[in-house]
Amino acid sequence: MQAQMLAPAAVLVLWTIIVLFWIIPSRFGAIAKVQDKSKLPGKAGVRGADLEGVIPDKANWPAHNHTHLHEQPTLFYAAVVILAIMGPSAADIFAAWIYVGLRILHSFWQILINTIPVRFALFLLSALAMTVLAVRAVIVTVFADPSALPT
Image 1 (cartoon, rainbow, N blue to C red):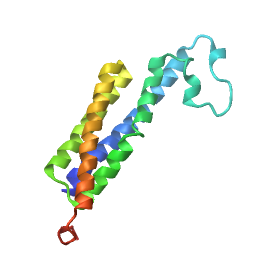
Image 2 (spheres, rainbow, N blue to C red; image 1 turned 180 degrees about the vertical axis):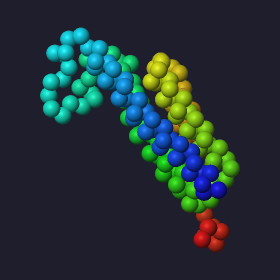
Image 3 (tube, rainbow, N blue to C red; image 1 turned 45 degrees about the vertical axis):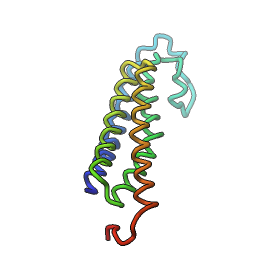
Image 4 (spheres, one colour; image 1 turned 30 degrees about the horizontal axis):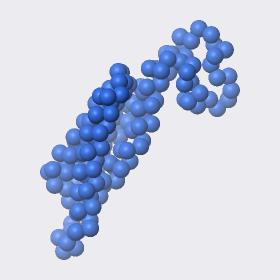
């Protein structure tokens, strides 16, 4: 069941890359539409944050979401690896897919609509799924029977 436990993590990695590439047309399209080019940062080493308030907020939403995909999901990846090594249950795999599905829904919501109540609800639900995975990772490691561990 190791591959089944790692599959949701692989999907989330791929989704993070998709969101990364979503940033490019969003920001460059917005930059191309700026009428007064003097408002654009004219310095070397411009960062995405330098575009805040210069291009429409919606054009920055994919980048904001991409940042979020590098925050809480890092805990998800750790929990998934722990569970994959220790031997996941079907419930662990189900919780991992729930987490990934909610994170993808959160991404679409934040990038396309971005109203806070729904976005927060999706975040909270994914955090609950992450908590289940974290607790399971603790249980399977702290209370592991050394004689029953995979070789």
